[in-house]
Structures are given as C-alpha cells and as structure tokens.
Image (tube, rainbow, N blue to C red; front, top):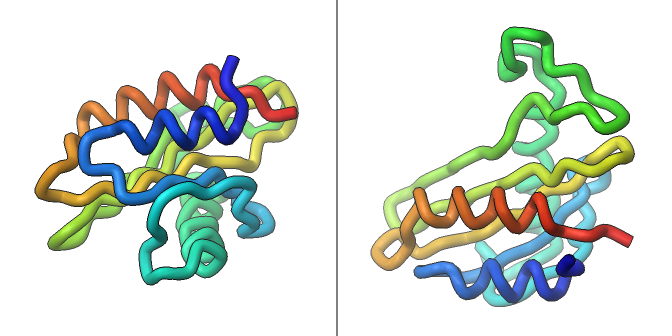
Length: 133
C-alpha cells in the first residue's frame, strides 16, 4: 500500500501531469506536493483548492440521493471535482478513510497532453490504496 510520496509520484506519471498534491480540506494544508504548482506557489494552491473541496463536501446540493452522511467509514458525498480552463485540468479526488476523512488528491494536468478520463480512473485507484499514517 503506497504512502503519500509514492502516491504523488504515481500521479505524476499520468499523461500531461504538471503537479500533484495531497491536501487537507479543513485546514488547506498541503500534506505532500510534487512537480509544479498552479500560480507557482504550492501553499496558495493548496488553500485555494481546499476552498473548492470544502464547498462541494459540505453542501447538501452535491450529496447523493440518500443524503451522503459524513463520518466514520461512510462514503463522502462527492467523489471528485473537475475544473477546466483553456490550458489545463484540475482534478480533485477525495480520499476515503476509516476516520473522518478530510483529504483529497489534487492533480494539475496540461490540457493538450492530459487524458481526463484516464486521470479520473487512476486517481480513484490511488485514493483507494493510499495509506495515511
């Protein structure tokens, strides 16, 4: 089972990957980063991505039909977020954990080289294997 560094390095092997981070969405703290950062500042990018993640995770409008309760080993109401602009994709994948999960993987892909569908599948697999200790 991969840890944070191994998971981020695996994310950087995705086609078009420019940078990756594991972020705590409650604090905006980057728990690990690799590669480039949008805007050139890893800490600022983590805080800004955490704001998006927090909005999606805490609002019932994005919850599944059953209400998507948080806590314990229950599933997060949102699996991932995709933000695109003219030259890149940002994929935020929530990481399920046996405790009250508040972390997500953020991968920044160059739009010309990136494969959004592949990145989404692989990040889901990585999030499922990630060991947070």
